[in-house]
Each structure stands twice: as structure tokens, then as C-alpha cells.
Length: 124
Image (cartoon, rainbow, N blue to C red; front, side):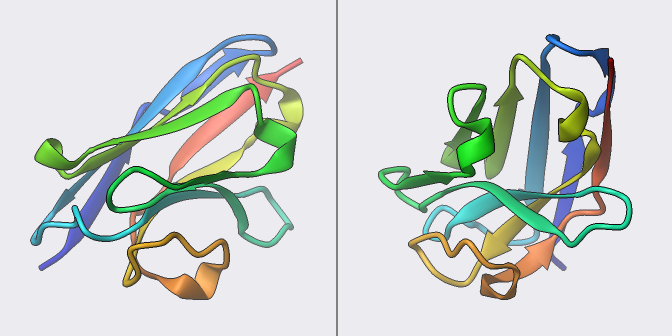
């Protein structure tokens, strides 16, 4: 049974940093894209960042470029999101996801497995 477990969320002041982790179990995902999405209250789930199975292709949301970095460790079946210079508008539940494709989709429908989410709250 596939499981994705996120950790690292919390409450931080604007300008602060957090590092989210997502550990996958149940199968190996080194050939498949992994991603982070987020969902703020009353809003649709939004693509944040993704990395291909090989790690050679990275996509990232324009509004977080230069502040967020996605990385993955295939030996640990894990993906990470380093978030720096956080802003109140980054407040959301953050979800990790795994795709059926090696090249990362940027749409929700391209992902088959999802974690339960971790709350990130940025205070002003």
C-alpha cells in the first residue's frame, strides 16, 4: 500500500523559513515525478513545484521562484520543499504527490498518490 507522509509544517513569521519533507513507502518512485501542491482556505489546490524522476527537470510556480526550492532523494524515496522568505500569502495546507509520469505534470490530474497534507501558517 502506497503512503506519502508529509512533515515540517508549522507557524512561522513572515520572512522566516520552513523545510517540508515527504517520505513515500509501499513502492519505489525513483522513475516518477514528485511534486508539491498547496491549498489555501476557499481556494483550489495549486501547483507549487515538481521534479522529474531523474531530477533533471524542475518546474516551480512563478510566485515562489527564488524563495522555494524542491529537491528529492531517490535513495530515501523522499521529496523536500525548502521555503525561504515566507509571506502570509504562502499560508496553506501543503501536499506532496507522485505522478505516473517521469516528466512532471503541473496539473492536479497528473498525480496518482497524495499525502495527507501539512499546515503552513505565515504570520505578518
